[in-house]
Length: 361
Image (cartoon, rainbow, N blue to C red):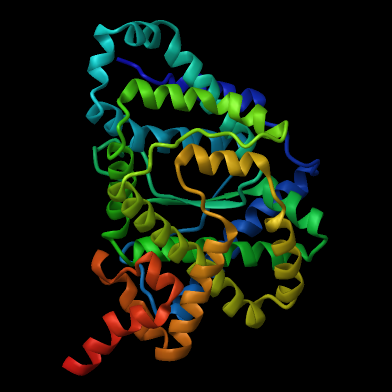
């Protein structure tokens, strides 16, 4: 049974996505080559600064255009959602009116809605560490892939009116930090996937409910543009679900905050105009975007900028108090990850993880 027509999602997204900025062919080739080079340069800076070591070889980032980003993310959705839909009991839909609709028309409708949402996001994302990839031809699961969206990076540096090489290296520092988080911490990818799937499965929804809510994305996007609030997922209300949401939020805040901390800490040494870039980028990032708000609601996670700032503040305070080596204990196991309360009160994490270890040693 096909619940979401993934091919329709790709085709819709690629058809609807806006073209990137006007760039001469030679400039485009230069940008791609430089991004690949700078991703490798950034990886060295991140490794040296954090003291973390990847457990697998990592070559230059994969540089894509907007359609390439859409294709990659549809693949990621498949890896995460298909097992969830199966566990939700998608086979029950086969014997219901909803199942007949899904088989006949609904899967294509859902594919169109998903593609439409991705077509918008494809114009905004600068880079991404893709955690969830389809299996390799030999059946093994890839650990991840670092992707940079060249037209969006070029568009952002033009909009911000900043030095292009500095901006590209700055972006690479952030994204290479994400790659380091997962390649130096082999358990983290499975942990994040398990949390996300557990969160979806903890709701009262079955597969038809999830599909209905995914379909609402198109209407919600239109509502957001009109200034409405939208309300796609209201199921996360029980204490168990709130606890799961807090765990997901804590991991996301740590990952993004760590990326921000590293890019800015390394920046002054290797990115001369980092202060100007950060100031202008923060202003751009804080701009309220109704589509972004809707996407957070669609995923059930209202990850506001405040939470990313809390993540960066957590890293700064822990490193300032106990040093980078002690901070890196955060990556030891799921148990050493900070809770959301600890993200907001770093001394609690230090007392729980660092101080007991110091005493026993």
